[in-house]
Length: 79
Image 1 (cartoon, rainbow, N blue to C red):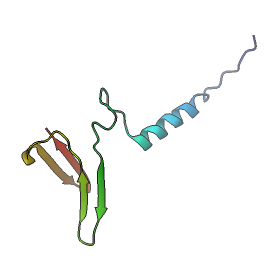
Image 2: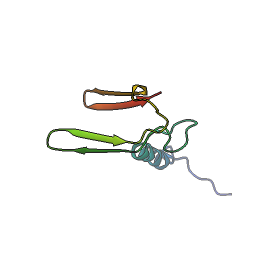
Image 3: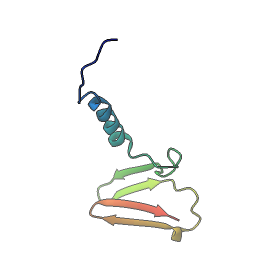
C-alpha cells in the first residue's frame, strides 16, 4: 500500500467550495424548507423611490407585518 504524504492544505478546495456556496446561496436555515424563511422579493428603483415587492404568505392583517429600514438595510418580518 503506497503512503500519501501529509498535505495540510488538501481540504482547502473543499472549504473554498463551501464558502462560495454560503456566499452565493446564503446560510442554510436549520429545520426550514428551501425558500420558506426567505420569500421571493423584487426590488427596483424609480426616479424618486426604491420599491420592494414580495410575497408574504400566511399574514392576514397589515399589523402582522413589520418593515424596518436602518442604514440602507431593509428588514421585513411578520408573525
